[in-house]
Length: 204
Image (cartoon, rainbow, N blue to C red; front, side):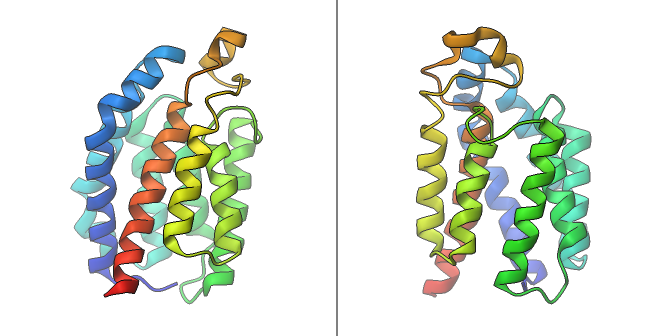
């Protein structure tokens, strides 16, 4: 999987802008079933990565992904920091510099499994895993970026009818039903931003 420094820097900028644009909405979602800080936490994490984007982009891709994960762990806080950080660090640790699409899909699968272990969660628990697993399935099928982005958005919306079984929202029991999970929502936003970039690159 090849990304030049300009690509990675641009992707970091796009992800930061997307979270900043929707941060208030993430806060609204989290206020309904959580601590109400997911928007602020995600903004802080993406700002921290953005501040290091030039140094990160200059690294080989595996090291760059691992560094992004470390920065997210240290800056996001809450439950989301360890989960997003684990995803990125495991991607970096497992990805070969010359990995092809199949190699990336296999590494993504292992990274998502690590997130599931870290959060002691599984699909249907109303977490970001409810987006990550469907996205991974589309990546494995080599779906077009537009299809992966649509899948991510649909998967996040599908968490609304679920009852939370992990995190603070789990304490609400049935009262957590009817609200989209904020972690799933931020995950879908990031996935869609990344896919949008690759779709534009493919079209150009």
